[in-house]
Length: 255
Image (cartoon, rainbow, N blue to C red):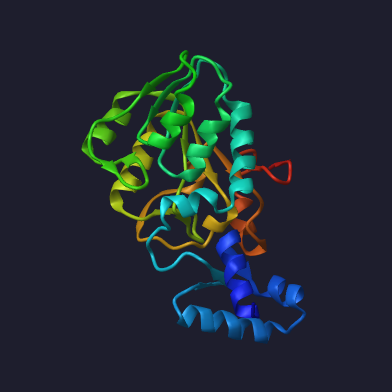
């Protein structure tokens, strides 16, 4: 397997790769790595980021089954941190996406939860406990993601007030703007956040700098932000603005 293929496999597994880290790992110059990355980008296999590249192509999301295994350990660490703050008997909103679904799985031992969600994977993860109450919207299920978008779902979240709203995001821009892949996803997320007493944004670090077409909401509007690790030094000024809100799950850090 040549170096470019190894870089591509690493990007597929980790979500993104950085020039300096690759240069050290392969024992070659940063210039050589940039040349490899440029070639992969020209082949539409990677997309350039500041200091590296990401596996996600274009402004379309990966298929659900691919996202479900991407950064699974990181998402599981995030889920465990969220589970620590959710008490028995809580009312929850849970958004679409793989990370919120993994959070739902981490809540399996909680008792008497009321869960309002348009994420069928999250609903199934919590359905084994007969003491839970699970409320789903009507409408058309989007496949293969197994989620529901549309006016019925927005109205459902408008009808309830949750103790906690747990939501993911497609990407995070350098000014703290939250991005998703279509306007319906943004509308759903914002309605969920607005009607939550405490909102919890869950995201692994690959979401920082990831591009998506639809914009709505800001990072600083979340009551709690749970990441796997800090995304990098160039993002530190943004994160410094959230004292007491930020949790780095794999570093054991509460900032």
